[in-house]
Length: 382
Ligand code: NAD
Ligand code: MG
Image (cartoon, rainbow, N blue to C red):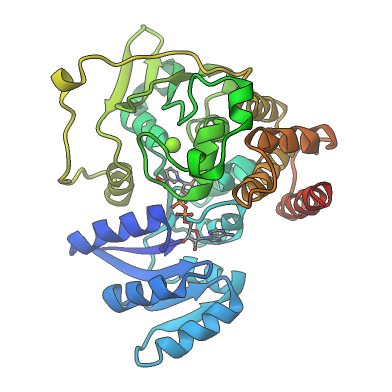
């Protein structure tokens, strides 16, 4: 059966890998391609995949794309409304949310409202609005299929009939490029060092999040929402080889894991075709060549951003919004070489300390808090 998908963020790392999968499977049709501003790549993608809709967040870039694509019957849409329209197209069976950041909240909610299944890569959306998204998905009978490799691994290891017997989730982390370093050493780190991830090739924001370990805090919150497991039952395990992608431990002591080479195409493809498993080319795990797999506890003292994220998750309400929004602004400042690497979690901590938690923030409150934090951080950096 043909599956029709819209991709939010088709020009990014996840988006382009999803399209390389779509190119190899005649039973996937692409209905909409969207991005923030990279219209050069979006134009190429439209010419290759012939979607009905192309949507660009940046209005000027959208106008330029319209001119470039005037020889094709594609509808070019602009702004947040354009993204929402792309997400709710009648023909969509599924929406892949591959935007980076909280910008993905509105179109994701629109897609769920319209009853579209979600292949979820955009974890920031769930971290900040999980309390709105998960009940809505339940009400609309929409499936939220994880694309994040750890969450896909947990999903693949989860025995549906034994959900009540889950003792804990073991969330693995590579430890990033600075594993084993001390606070002083981290002070010297530059963007280029942080962008060199040992095992995964990803977009720049998540690569920095992997280096600070903030990514793992976001993933703990993401897992807690997706699998309805409280944060205390989620353990982070540093596993530098990135072969075990995460595990589920049951009440009888059994641990079920999903293993594979670190390649995002597998979790992306698994979500797109779920419940079917399809062939995928690529390297296979050679256990003898690996020799051993190792594990250690995360260093919460040195990597303070992880500790702050766990605190934010425990406090709940609007605190994860503050944690996430401050991190997004701080990562941008670090990439622009305005702050040091530890400066990222220093800004997050300052933002969290200045915030009084709202218990169940509405969508409007979430978006307002994000704006406030962004402005505050800009002021602090002046
Ligand atoms: P990326 O930076 O490579 O791509 C981001 C995409 O989002 C682009 O298409 C871009 O046009 C769009 N976008 C929309 N608004 C944007 C904005 N304000 N700033 C920048 N880009 C914007 O990101 P990615 O690595 O593909 O990650 C996408 C999402 O998937 C993130 O939430 C990330 O945490 C998650 N994820 C990624 C990977 C990975 O391997 N890349 C793995 C697990 C989870
Ligand atoms: Mg991950």
